[in-house]
Structures are given as structure tokens and as C-alpha cells.
Image (cartoon, helix red, strand yellow):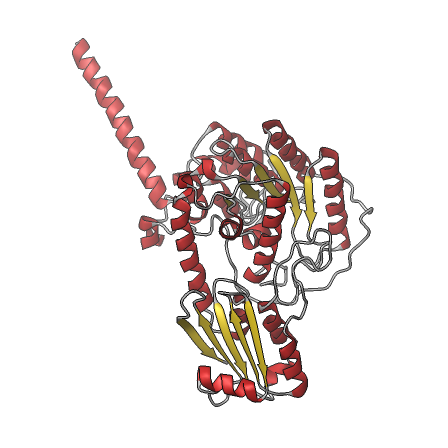
Length: 474
């Protein structure tokens, strides 16, 4: 009898184990992959990251960790997420610290004035939380973020009633059978270390910088979680950098940013207010939507500024060439291939020009005499933008560029209404300009002239080999 009971117990244990494995596999298959694709690679080598970045969509779109690696050898991961609030960023950090031991945490504070723990998008919270393995920290995060009995998502569902689906995602995604794609089986991991380039050019509103001694009252959960984040980092010996990302901020938003500055001073942590550094980005060409989320051109400028700041103020190691970081070489190749595909995939003039503000490609550009685009301010600014260089000048108003309009030959061609040719050789950092007959000759040599009805020819080449990668006429 005892032997029979033992066998039954063993069968029950094996059945439960097998059921757990099946449910785990089903959960992974059925789960919406946005979270795992964007953040899953972080869990592969979490102890490699010296810097972690936390924030909302603005940070997702403008902080490119692979650029920091290529330029400074800084190993970082962007754990920002669309729709994040300060409480969600705090709990993202707490989950990350179960696996990683960063030297610096960089926190975007644009949403500090929000007095909510979660937004109306329950999917955004899933994206921020789904990829984390179930743990005590994850359960604490979900219980805290969904503790308001009045908080509802955009469909009217109470967050308190949805807690279980954030812990056990199969309950949320069990009916996705008819939505499965090949990517659900193979995955499409993010090669940008959590970032997300968004290509587009949109004009934004202007704004005026207010005095830095005008403050907002420190109200709401955003401020309390900002303090909790700083205090947790200081308790663990982690450096803190707060950043107020660039956008045309209202007076009230700037007052909140000034309040953040006073908090940073109180705790003795670093703070960069990009809104006050109003020339770090060019709002005429560096935003992809009217809400001033940055496109890759603006993102490169912010990333480079932060990279130079981190290298100077936190003395981070340059890990390039180290044997323990050999996997980053493969990551770098995947990122370079991804970015090149994005650049070469642009078939509209504004988007292609903004993507050519990038050292990974060289370009030759020819503009026909009396071209109508000479009267288009956005196109002219995008052309100048390609040749702008990044210079870290802390607290200076022209911190990102040594010249607002570096192409003198372009200005000459516009005023004379003559042909123009530009050669950007990124291999040696040279910029060559030709105007008039010389430009006509160069255009004929490189492009065979302009097609009928076309005003501008663009050739994209590989800086290392000179290989012609793409040619467009508009």
C-alpha cells in the first residue's frame, strides 16, 4: 500500500511538473512579444552594463546605447518604455537591479509632474513588465503600480482586477492563437539595446526659456518616486544622472524641471536640462512628430552629449577590445546592419536627408541650378544638418554644433541660384563643396546629370570601401 501511495505521489509530482513546463511554453508562445523583443536581450548579459537608462517614449527614441558603445566604449541598456511614468521607471529599475550592478542610472524626468502610477494603456505596462521573470520584486511592482482601486485602462478595466495577468501572462494572451506570426516562434530581438529609432520630420512649436528660479510645487507621485529612485541608487552606491529631455516645454513644464534641479542639488546628483540647452537639438528638423519626440538626427545629438557627459563626469571604462565584451562586436555588427537598412530604406527626401546626419555613411549630393528646393527652409536646414558636428560645451547654447549653418557653398549657391555639389567623406571627415560650373561637372561625373524633372541627386556610399549603396533622385 505504501509503495502504491508513493507511486501515486510521484505520478502527481511528475504530472504537475509536466503541466508547469507546458504552461510555461504556452505562455511564452502566446505572449505578445513587444516586451521580450525590446528588453529580452538585457537578461542575456546583465552584469555587463555600466549604465542603465530609464524613462518614457522620449528616452526610447533618443538614447541609443550602441552609439555610446561605438564612440565611448560605454556598455549600457535603454530600459525606457512607451507610456512609462516615474513609478513604472522606478520599478523597472528595481527589477533590473535584481540582475545588474550598474555604476550609473540615468533617469529621464519629463513625466515627473504626472500624478498617476500607470497610464490608460494597459499594453504599455505589459511591455514594461512582461519580460521580467516572475519574482518577489516583480510581484511587489505590480501590486504597487495597480493599487489604486479607481485606476482604469482605456477600455474601462480596473487595474486592480488585472493584477494576475501581469504575473501570469497566459491569462492575458491565451486567445492569441489566430494572431500568431513566424516572429512568435523565432523572435525579433531588439538590436538597439532597447532603443527605437523613429524616422520622420515634423515642425514643432517654439518656446521661451523661463528663469531658473521659478519652481513648481512638489506634488504628486512622480516626485515621490523620483526621490525613491535617487535614494535607492545612493543606498546601493550607484551614480545618478537626471535628464530633462528636449522638447518645446510649456512654462509649467519648465517650472517642474527647475524643481527637479533643486532636488538634484539637494541630493548632490547630476542633472542635465536639455530644454534650457535649447540648441542641443534643432527643433526644425530633429523631431519626428509634433509632440517633439526626436528622430535619429536629434537622438544622435542627445546620445552624444550624454555619452561625453558620462565619460567626463563618471569616469566610465572604455570596454572596447576587452575579451569579456567580445559579444559586443557581434551586437555592433547587427546594429550597423540594422541602421544601414533604415538609412537605405528611405524613399522620401526629408527622411533620407535626416538619416544622412550619421557617420556610418558617406554621401554625394548634387542640386540643379534654379531648383525649387532652394526656397524650402526645411530642406536647406536638413542639408546643413548633415554636416553639423557634436561638441560638448556644458551650459552653452550651441552645445551640439560648431556651426548652425556649416555649408557656406550651399548658401552661395542659393543666393546665386546656381548648381551645387556636396561631398561628405566620413572616412576622413572632409566636406567638399562646389558651386556653378564645377558643381555641374561633378554632377555629370558622379550621376550622369539629373533626370528630367528631378532637382537633387543623392548617392550614399560606404565610408570604408567607397561602395555605392544607394542612389536617389527627387
